[in-house]
Image (tube, rainbow, N blue to C red):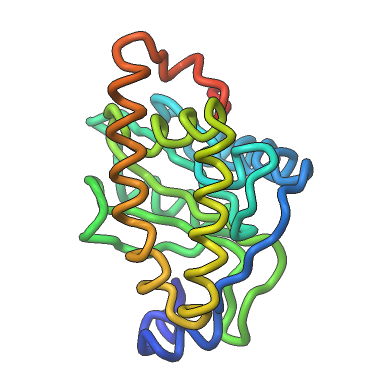
Length: 201
């Protein structure tokens, strides 16, 4: 992110970018397709696999209106060139040491005055077998869990609308529980390249 946004406190970030929940929208997939093309144009030579994941990738699911994209890059990728290319494509770069290697995240839709346009998070990782993809697919296959997750989000928003970290932490135990169920049910038959909760190129 820009230097000024990076210097904001957690409280300031929460006030500037509060939790917003919206009903599922078909155009979220269209936004993903647009951003997928933009990302491939910028760093396609390094991409191993790309996925639309998170709540906006699950039809009918109440979600923060943020398009989450997981980009898996080859182990020998030139990270400096990826950062430069993504910034030239209009994304803000944020180093995320707490995230899986190579600890890179890119964003759109954020400004010093608040949200601007469509929010997009691009999570860059080396190839792996990611929990998020199992969780997403399980929600699609189990409408009752889908609804339980929605209710949890609604309750957390009531308490933590301006505390994004607390909102996210409040979902952790649910996500861990459902991910364990998903891995038990889906693995080893679940095919990352063919899962229906995200698109691959």
